[in-house]
Amino acid sequence: MRAHLGDQLVIESPTTGASRRDGEIVGLHHDDGTPPYDVRWSDTDEVTLVFPGPDAHIRHLEHGQPGTTGGAAQPDTGGAEAVSTVPSSARRPDPGDIGRRVSVERHRQGLSREEAARRARMSSDYLAYLEERPADPTVATLVRLADALGTTVDALRGGGMDLPPGQGHALLHPQLHDLSPDECRALLSTHGVGRVAVSASDGRPAVVPVNYDVVDDAIVFRTAPDSVAAAAAETEVAFEVDHLDEALSQGWSVLAVGPANVVTDPDAVRRLAQHAYTTPWAGGEREMWVSIRPTSLTGRRITPAPR
Image 1 (cartoon, rainbow, N blue to C red):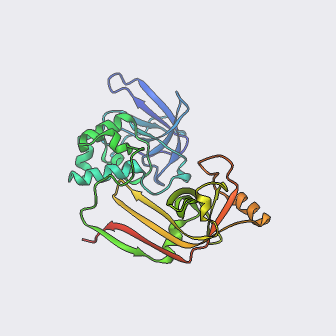
Image 2: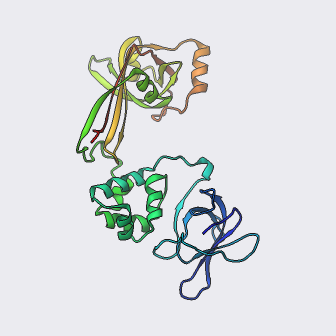
Image 3: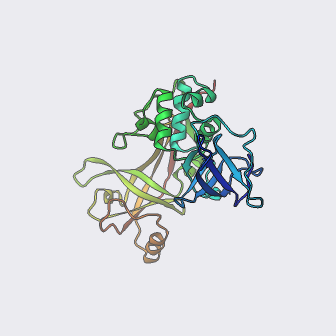
């Protein structure tokens, strides 16, 4: 099956031959015109990513005649597997969270991609796409996958949002290694949520999550003068940021240690406010800027050990 932009994808009824659904192909993912396609459906005007099944054919724009399915049609449940998508130019090459969870569960079950696809009654091409690219599969697709992999839809979706992170299975052969200062700076990136460790006004230690940015190699965050986080000002503090990949049981953490100071210069405050990626999630009046200049950057990462 090969198509061009503007061609029509037609899904026929397998029993009557009548047209069941059609849409315009508005995006190609391969230069040779092979599936999958971004299709704008005529009945909903929504754009979805489509892997055509055996009951689909192309009506070419220049001919107005159906194309042939050729050897590209894959066994499926009938119709086409479809997932929500964004324009192909904006797609990231990284797998999405659901795809990574599917891949991990498949490997835990010792299943090949072809066998898992057969059990889930879908094409292996679609399963490959799901594991390798960001995707938003339908509920029906997730139900079939969960059944095939011996897990639940909730687990594939990353259920348990209110639970603390790190409750997944540990790697069978984990490897813990130190990160260089440059790696630490890269992971700190430009913004996110980190934790600042301070001595509160009552003398007790406290760890407070804050929205932060990185500006000119300094970690900056906004808070209120009477908040616990404000106790960081004019002291040496520890600031920690981390990431856990529940799907792959991997993660990293970075610890920055250095003096924290209140930013008082009006031009500097204005620049920070303009640069800020987001307002503090906690809300309220939080216009006191605190800057941490790290004198020490250390970090560690957990990955699978080489086999």
